[in-house]
Image 1 (cartoon, rainbow, N blue to C red):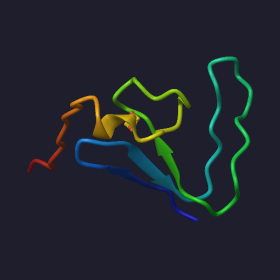
Image 2: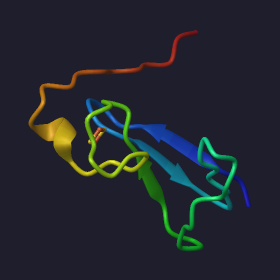
Image 3: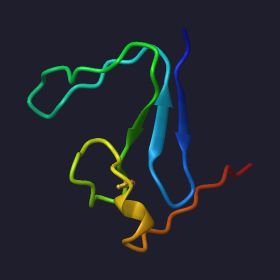
Image 4: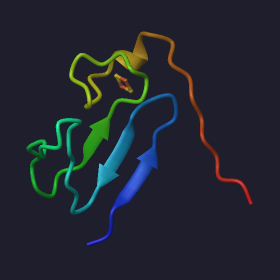
Amino acid sequence: MSVTITLNRNASIKVEGDITLVGDDGQPIPLTPGKAIFLCRCGDSRKRPFCDGTHKSNGYCSTVEASA
Ligand code: FES
């Protein structure tokens, strides 16, 4: 199964597919198989590495568009 990574406008990074997420201690972070995860990229989530929705209230802005 392939992995799809989506940079959500002004929000999190959505990761779908057969993935393993490893913490900075080298240990895998338990995930629900087959369920997408949303990683925080604003830096303010209280549930890092996961998004908790804080980006909606902290003014986080980031857009990423493909270039040729
Ligand atoms: S991107 Fe959602 S809380 Fe940081």
